[in-house]
Image 1 (cartoon, helix red, strand yellow):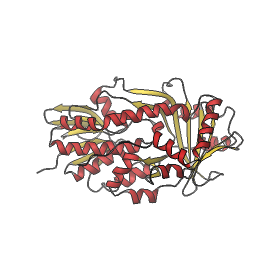
Image 2: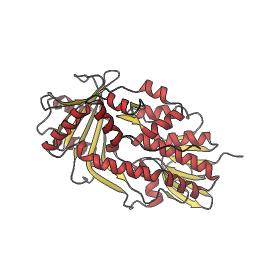
Image 3: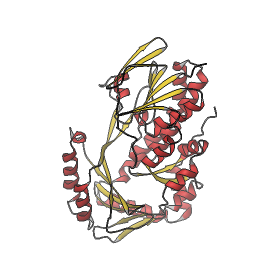
Image 4: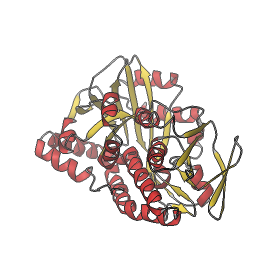
Length: 396
């Protein structure tokens, strides 16, 4: 029996995970990716919960631990560099039963893609421009490639999903801006290193975090509040750097001159609004969404990649179970996963105020919570209440 073709837009974590499971269930996934080559690098993420369970079923955990990092300290410092508060990162690991690791986003994606690149067709440097559904087939058109027919099309192409815009309409009101922007870049030769530590300076409405990486690398992460989205900001690289300079040069951290110098020189700056995607449904006919394209929880949730992997696993399982009834598969996928996603999105919105507190009092209160987090049973309680997933993966 011929393997049924399914087109996946986006060769990131969600798309590659979906391709991995579809291959093992007898389908022929094809990945199309706008970037000219597979994307590597990126900022470091914490990885736990349902996504960890999926990675374990894919036998990826040894490779992820080898590529990952152990951060055993979260510290906040004053403007002059004096320690304000600190919490052991091993508290998270302990509370989550050791099922926790930190890894560069690109390294996680690479571990998945390297296990499918010989078996799944991939097309880089191209993207979907149209989807025409007719009966039991979907014809996709591309910016460069010839049109192709598939059983279904899956958008795994992130917060600004092209498939979502095509299948549901570009004017659909599905993005909730949370009042923050985030930016990140990687640099080499930073003059200060503190291995195994996320070190942050926070002032009202803004925060800088730095962390040391292998090969003399350092990651820099910015988070700042904005009362509204700034039109055109995401499309203008010069404007992105300018708003970071304006925001973080006020009453600056002692390390700001070194960071600003590297910000000016960096050619690959991640910059995006912190938003959530809230869709009334995750499918339209034979087109469906997964990962950030369907249910972006935002960086505030801390587990977008893990949730993307869990969603991809469930979607692939339901596609196989439905035996060609894609409407049934997509509905079952949504029933399984939507209630959990909505809880995680709500939790992220509640956590927002503590991520970059608006006032000096908010910063003080956050410091006190971190001090309490040094007590093991308190850390266990906070972790289990705030970030532990209460979701059991189905078996297929």
